[in-house]
Amino acid sequence: MKLFNSKILGTGSFLPDKIVTNEDIAKRVETNHQWIVERTGIHTRRVGDLSRNESPSGMAKFAAIKALDAANLTPNDIDLILFSATMPDQTMPNTASVFQSKLGITNNCPAIDVNAACSGWIYMLPMANAMIKTGLYKHIMIVGSEMLSSWVNWEDRNTCILFGDGCGVTILGRASENEESQIYSSVLSCDSSKKDHLTLMAGGACKRITHDVLEKNEQWMNMNGQEIYKSAVKTMAAHSERVLKDAGKTMDNVDWFIPHQANLRIIEAVGNRFHFPPEKVIVNVDRYANTSSASIPIAMDEFIREGKIKRGDNLLLAAFGAGLTAGAVFLKY
Ligand code: UT7
Figure: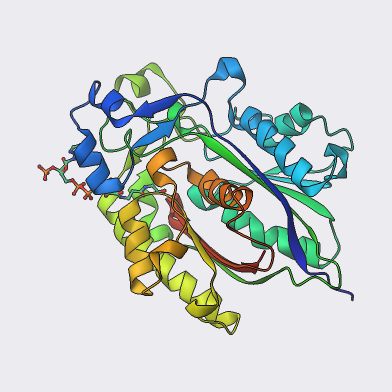
C-alpha cells in the first residue's frame, strides 16, 4: 500500500476584536492585575460577540478563509472537517455541520465534532495524519474554535481570569515526493482518574438545565487549578520527551516548542525541565489567555504569518485539558 506523508498546507486564525483586561475583571470580582500576571502571565483576553457571528462556527469561518487562501484551495477542496469546540454552538446539529454550511462547502464532506477539551485540536492531528497517510482523504480541515466566555462564571475569580475566545484552523494534506514535511511522531492520552478536576456537569443528558441547577450555579465550569497545574507540567513534559524519542530526535532538533497556552508558569516549568531556550518557546497567553483547543493552532498561525516559523522547521506541540486529556506531536512543517 502506498503511504503519503502529511504536510500542513495552510493555517489561519481569528480573534474577536473585543479585549477584556485584567482591570476590567477586577471591577467584577476580587482580584487584581498584579495577581493575575504573577500567577498566570495573562494581561488580556478576547471575547466573542454573537451579533458579529463570533460563535465557534462563525469564528471558524473567518479563520478557515485565511487558511484556504494560504493553502491555495477552495472550500469544496476540503474532503473532511474535524472540529473541536469544548463548548459547541449548540447540542444538535454538531458545530462541524454548521461550519460546513457557513463556509459554503457543498460537496457533502463528512463533518465531525471531536471533544477532548483543550487537547481537542492535538487529538485530531494524529487522526488526520493517519487518514492522509493512507490516502483516505486529501485535504482535512482541522479546527479548534472556542467561545468559553459563554461558559465561565464571570463571578468566579478561580476561572474567569483564565479563558479567552478565538479560533485556529489548519489544513492537512499530502506532501509531494520531493518535500520533507511530515508528522514524525505523536502520543495521545487520557488520565480519567483526574476527570473531576475540571468539569461542567450541567447541560448534558445526566443533568439537564433546570431552575434548581441554575439556582445552585451548576451551569458553569468548575476547576481544581492546582491539580490541573501539577498534571499539566508532568504530562506535557513526559509526552514531549516521548515523541522526540519515538522520532529518534532530541531537544536540539526542535526549532519551535508550541505548548498549550494555559498559564505562563506551566509553559516555563515545562521548558525549564528540558533547559529549552525560552526564545524558541512560542507564547501568546499574555494577549489571548487560554483559548482551549484553539490555542496551539492560533499560536502556530501567528508565527507562520510573522515569518518566524519557516518551511522545514521542526515543531514540537504539546497540550493538556479536561479529562485529563493530553497529547504531543512532533512534525516537520
Ligand atoms: O486548559 C486547562 C485549564 N486550566 C488550567 O490550566 C489551570 C491550571 N492552574 C492554574 O493555572 C493555577 O492553579 C491558577 C492560576 C488557577 C491559580 O494559581 P495558584 O498559584 O495555584 O493559586 P491558588 O489556587 O493556590 O490560590 C492562591 C491564593 C488563594 O488564597 P489563599 O487561600 O492563599 O488566601 C486563592 O483564594 O490566591 C487566591 N486567588 C486569587 N486571588 C486573586 C485565587 N484566584 C484569585 C484571583 N485573584 N483571581
